[in-house]
Length: 428
Ligand code: PMP
Image 1: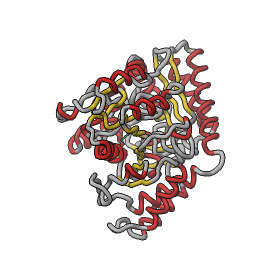
Image 2: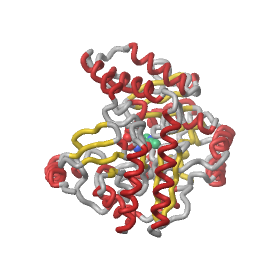
Image 3: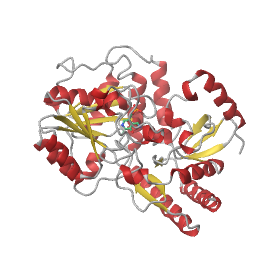
């Protein structure tokens, strides 16, 4: 494959955009460097770069594109919204409609508020939890990424750890001191932390199914115990469902495990590909938020008609019968196929998969927490990534990310991908 135009564009970008990219995970720094591929258009499960190369896409824009690129129902909704005016600064009916849809899908959301990104959504849940409890400290799990605001850039998983900056420069030590980090799936460590900082912890923040050091499920009973322990300590439980909401079921990880948090932050899929964030939870907690309560949060673009229309349309597609079963079947086919090729070529991998999302880790036997993900072979992943790119299969350029299936992938796409994996493994 030729990447001449992408390379030229990257050179140009380096002159104008810091690092050539508008989000660090898009650079190929973690896979041995080189110019990222510049996409021109996407259709369904495929996208096409500026050099005319076609790829089967498993990046899905880091999760949001679950219905594939340029889904006609979503495209139409966005274009209708665009022709009716994209921003008013007043409420619109679409916000009510979408809020009701989210509440029906995720019963723990008694009240919601829309904003513009996952970062904003999580950031506000923390502010609200602090306002509600009158406490300051936050307990989070190592390797979980919750956005790029100061409080959560502490042992923060895929992006930052890939780039070797788990604690970002510019985050005040005083802020980091308010964040306690324990290993995921480790209840003893959590108990210890809650005992040590008894009466100080405002909230326990968790990705109920981790997406940021690959797909890692909670051990059986883990989430229930997180709730029990946090509540005994007077802390709230916040689920960061920016990746997980509508990824595994029509609803959230809460329905997958039958455990409800006090507050939930969302993003990605609920915007159907346009910028969005949303948070919600128990009524009396949410009533801390302005204009009802003393916790301030606002946004010029929040609840904008285009994002609302796009999100509504995306959920309409996802609410159709059989969507998640199909994602699961495709995921299973892909997982099995990759494992067979690994056996055939004696490549040591482990796959974590939940329905239509999976991570292939090289050189390890299991990944249940961040340390185990960190121990996986990034150099082998880097080689695999580039071989797959040359095969016309686009993955996220980091050993910590997931492969995301979309409703538009077909069994044929999966089988082609498996053959490509076989050829890539043969060259490793
Ligand atoms: N939380 C989680 C779990 C995420 O995966 C991400 C983004 N990868 C965020 C928060 C931040 O979302 P955004 O990039 O929309 O700010």
